[in-house]
Length: 460
Image (cartoon, rainbow, N blue to C red; front, top):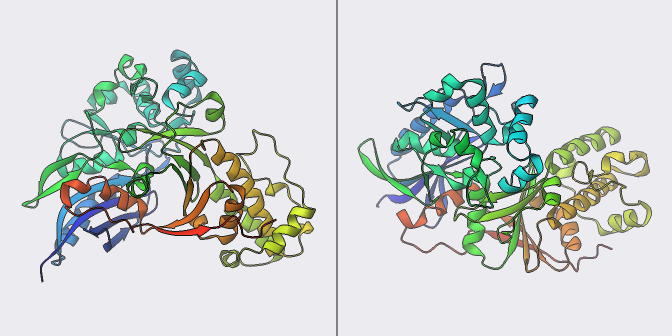
């Protein structure tokens, strides 16, 4: 029996670092996972262990190459964003991989925005809310201003996906999905780098931009591979949906953050949208993706702990609660909507203001939490919703929550709402980005499992 042709995909999250093998039908045939102990940068701030990550790439590849049943045709990478690796002439990292949550100096930030048009105008042009170190371009600017001698030693500042590709190819390139994700680097109104990048001399530290579906012919341990240049994980997760659906849709990606991605809304961000935590991503084909986000997964965990503590229950119990229309009907008749200002709607669900003594059971309280969270989610999603959207696909943790899904369907009666299930959407999207370079088969039409939630469910 012959070897199975596969693509290897490294999917690097903040917690788990994974390697997947997909066959030509995009069935996952192999998975390997690793977790590393974080280290500290020179300021004592926690950061990724870059050396462990580097070594794991080679170790994982050596391991799967010993698996005789697989024939690796291609390799690609996706990672979390807002993270630069600064390499010197020999390709060695010059600094730690700084955490995107690292505190940013207020004085330096104020100087930057003063010099380049102010926060409102700058954020509008770059589709980047003011996020400090989470704007990766600001990390580069900080090095430029605070450590100019080190800045001069930088050959290239590579976003993490491109650094991982560099480890195999030894060729440095930039990718638009990383550059275009709230970095403060890209001017969406000009479709080019913002003027500060050239004025400050940062452009010379950025590698040439190649299309996201580019592959580089590379040799590793004596064998030829097609190696992609890597993608930002949020953009990669969108690719399977774009490959399978042509009519306008929103992908509601749920987890710690719940992000509404509209790849069919290409309009520039307005001042109001920026104020309400909207931003633009860049899809792998170079088109902007308008997005809004909520810290809803975090809020859910916080409030579930509060409910469990009040009712003396285990938090695991709430994973099994099913949608109960009678409870919803009762709550809507006796509990008024949370009174939150427009500014506060995106900061908290309103449930934190609720007196838990109003509820006869934790099940009732949890249904109210879902009502409050859906009210918040509707507000957020409508910021990027536009005429013509036919469907909302929900993936991630809340797609498995029947209360959440039924209430969301009721809140958008004019749109079809689906819970989407797919094995490793980010990794699969990363593989699909370079499909034509290694796979002669058509992209399968059944890689996404959908469960429809009807608006006709009795929720009133």
